[in-house]
Image (cartoon, rainbow, N blue to C red; front, side, top):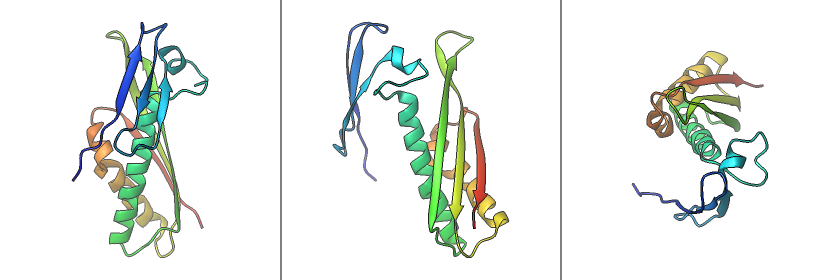
Length: 146
């Protein structure tokens, strides 16, 4: 399996500086990053490590869930997955990711709610990003839609 690479160029102090993160392997884009905007309610056109983790986690979970549903003989018509990654002050100093809330809504013919939930629970613990984030509280809200 390949190794994927991202690169960040940063200039200046934490509060006054800024940077750009480049998705080097795919070359799909370069995105601005800034600590004041990272800690603000509005991102103002910049991304953050938390948003990038959310993107990685939601896409990884969707792939894993699709695989597990396939093992049950069901092919999703659609899966909509969101991941909310929360950054908070760390009592030990600095900041930490205090939790990740995964939410999935799926249209999957040929499976019932219990089977969907079982696959979703398996994807939550089995996707590689979830495994990498061991130690972070991850919650799951999974619902099969008709």
